[in-house]
Image (cartoon, rainbow, N blue to C red; front, side, top):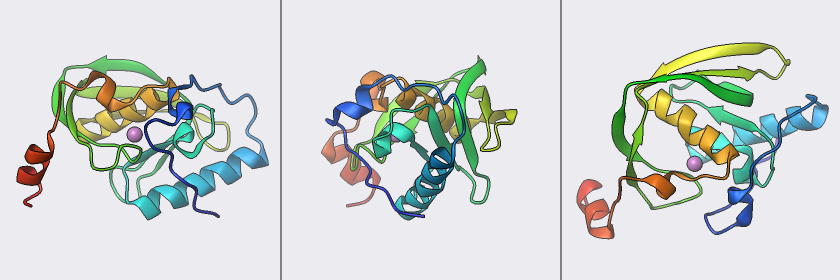
Length: 160
Ligand code: NI
C-alpha cells in the first residue's frame, strides 16, 4: 500500500466527471488499498478517486471506525428529509461550511469483488455519501454551501 497525494481545490481533476469502472482490475484494487491508507493517514471520513488524481467513479466512506464502505460506481437511489450541518473536505483544508443535504440516503454500489450492495445512512453518514458521490461529478461542498465560515467564525468555533 502507498499513501497518495491529496489534490487541493484549484486542481482541475476535481472538476472532472468521473468515468464508471467497467472491470475491477488489479490496478483498481491497488487504488482502493492506497486510497484506504491515504484516508486513514489523513484521518478523514471519506475520500473520492479524483482527490487522488484518478478520474474514476470510486470512493470510500468511513464514518464509524472499522465500518468502511468501498464504493465503485455508487449511485444514490433514495433520499429523504433534509439536514443542514457543517462540512469540510480533505481537498479544502481549513475551510468549513454549512450545506443542505438529505437526512437519509440509500446508495447502491459495487464492492471490490464486483458484488452489488445497498447501504442506507442517516446524519453524518448520509452527508458523507452525498459529499463523496458529488466529487465523482466534479462538485465540491463549497459550490452549494449555504454559508462558508469566515476565518473569524472558524477561530470562534474551534476555540482559537
Ligand atoms: Ni471532499
